[in-house]
Length: 81
Image 1 (spheres, helix red, strand yellow):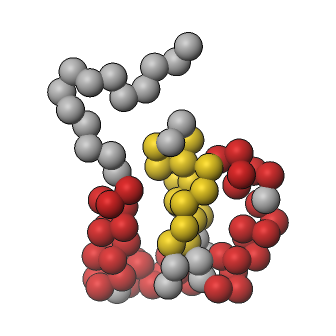
Image 2 (cartoon, rainbow, N blue to C red; image 1 turned 90 degrees about the vertical axis):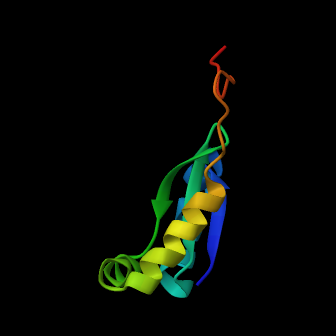
């Protein structure tokens, strides 16, 4: 199973193509906004598998941990202009 990352604007502009990829190939998409992971798009079949399979849960947890940035105390992570 593939997991891809995509910027929120790209996901918005290509939603039909991304949804087709999710449904046809069971690809999972992590959607980033301001370069930070914010949401996941996955098929209902994948969700059911995650809910019922501990190995699949562990795999997804690993993917999410790898995508989550490490923060340092006192370091500015995001500042709106």
